[in-house]
Image 1: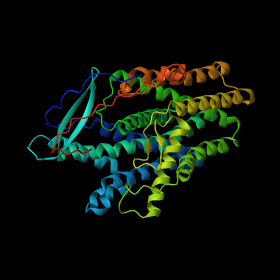
Image 2 (image 1 turned 135 degrees about the horizontal axis):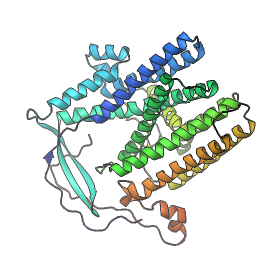
Image 3 (image 1 turned 60 degrees about the vertical axis):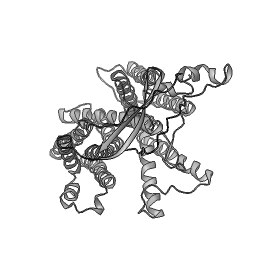
Image 4 (image 1 turned 30 degrees about the vertical axis):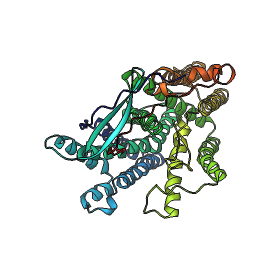
Amino acid sequence: MDGPSGGCPPAAPAAPSRAKLPLGIVFSTALFCGEGAAAAVLCLSYGHSDDRFWLALTVFFVLCPSVLVQLTLIFVHRDLSRDRPLVLLMHLLQLGPIIRCMEALVVYCWSGKEEEPYVTITRKRRLRKGYEVEMEQEVGHSVRRLATHRNAFKRMAVIQAFLGSTPQLTLQLYISVLEKYVPAARAVLMGICLVSVTYGALVCNILAIQVKYDDYKVQLRPLAFLCIVLWRSLEISTRVAVLVLFSTVFKHWIIPIALVNLLVVFFLPWVQFWRSGTRLPDNIEKNFSRVGTVVVLCAFTLLYASINMFCWSAVQLKLADRDLIDKSQNWGRLAVYYVARLAENTALIILWYFFKTDVYENICTPLLVVQLLLGYCLGIYFMLLFFQYLHPCRQLFQHNVADFLHCVCCRRHPPGSPLHLQAPHEPGVRHSIV
């Protein structure tokens, strides 16, 4: 699909950037605290019933991602080189997100009350009625500090979702299927985990769009937001349910299957990097040694593999690139992922259906199999709907979903060209990304 035609109106004069209410930060903090509180109540229940194994796993899936969240917030804010003992103490107590959220709210409340000099001028493009409109904004200290908080909490939401909430949701659903009983505390924890992982996948989509279209001001419409939520919630919930049902019958096979899923996706970017023959990127952190850079990249790749085990990560790692992300829109990889994942889910749920030994009262198992497969297919439908009609930068696609599905781009018509409009050059204007 070709981009919109037409000229580019002149850039508007630079205007002061206003701080926006950090709702995402508040929501991420609420999910973090809510999941921890619900897990604590459930752990008390496991303690009273002397279920030490389930108690240990529940505590592990709370503490492990919590430690990673604290390290992420410290790393993004660079607190190790600053004298902030109270903040570091809160992080040691696993309460870092709370103090960070309070800091962000204080910055927001004080922003705009007194005039402050701007730090830099940012220039972004916005697609509007077939044209690219260039916008300039003066970025002050408050807006820049809030942007740092938002970036940190976006990464925190992804880590919390896929290294904590998803394993926790899988564990608690597995226990519920074995016991054929769902107490209120466990139901609340599973509900919070599902919201957390759906929000984490939504953040993955937003981050992927912002990285790929860095020069553009990206803003999701409410309908696009709803479509992503439906896509991600259906995709993740059906995937978790299939893995849990399969593990109830093939307890010794689920671990090799999970390891194969994890290790293949983990090593694939490294194999591509080694085959390219390029050097490691040196922009991760200037104070890191080569070993430190490798450790950070391995942790980043592990998070990437964990995401792809349960849902599409929305980005492809490219360790040879400065931004670590492949910015090309590769429909082939997307198609291969969902075809392979649908085939795997189908095989696992059919094996469970034919080899199950437990009797599930008030549940029609053939209907359950059909519902899980249709639910995953419905998630794919919402994904296609988003990319075809609701993607905020769909006008920049060289080919859209319909082109790929009908092979128009490679058989009938020569490939179109994406929108490439030159920005007017104005000397004396500094360009920066906050």
